[in-house]
Length: 344
Ligand SMILES: NC(=O)N[C@@H](CC(=O)O)C(=O)O
Ligand SMILES: [Zn+2]
Ligand SMILES: [Zn+2]
Image: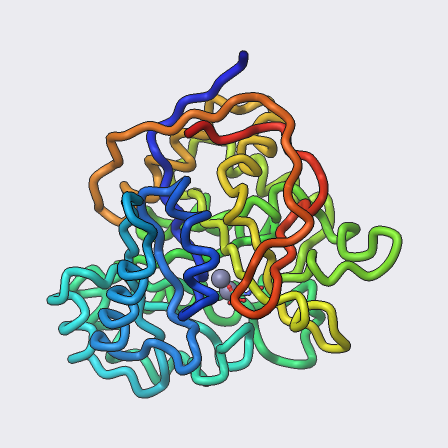
């Protein structure tokens, strides 16, 4: 039997939702990952330390008996987030980062930032106290082509921001383009990026494979093959600036399979297995552990995990759907087979 043993990985970008939906998806992540950076784009968003800490308690209360998992919390940045909120978040010890959604860029981002200049004093405090800024890096300008939104965000917003705040720790989340890879690679050590499994495995053809495929729709949208290859090269390069962030983003089937479907791909049911498949395709399984289990912890200045997980090379079928509160969830590769399986 072929096996692969790794230090238990962490997921540095995760959507857990809330209530019954959270209860449905949380075990998938907790089974594989020791910790995860939990995104704050709830309804209403977690904009204060108190809200983020209350959300953390709800996550811990929803964890099945006997499962260990540490949610790392984030604050949702708005035009009105004050520096004192950052100080309080830092003092809490449970909040690891602040999330910047350009208003209207993605799911539950309506309360996000309309103009990053409105947040300069708050960003200054973050820079001073070493609080990382996590960025959904897409412009909302309706004139910009959907496939260029990340590249244009980099030029118009992110590069100027790094020049104004050179010591602000920034994670460019779920990067999808050659330009993002090159920027992060050549930037200072204050800049890092997460890469999803789906952006490593799929290019934009997957959106139109024999018809329109709503379960392959996420933001930033899948890009062309040249970009996918660049992401794979970055993830398998051993460069500590690139690390695992699934962006597993569950939406019920009825909100995906509709005239105007939600953005988000669910991958938590097989997250590390999907990354293993991508790394194996690149003949770089030996690079998976650092990407999945070391680089993120090092960037966040948290201890690396000590326990291990083992994957075995064995085909298994992903269920056609999963329970999701009062609806169902269609996971990535639903009804198809995967080559790696996590062992208990
Ligand atoms: N990635 C997505 O397509 N969707 C995410 C939001 C996000 O990460 O942008 C979600 O919350 O559904
Ligand atoms: Zn995002
Ligand atoms: Zn996300």
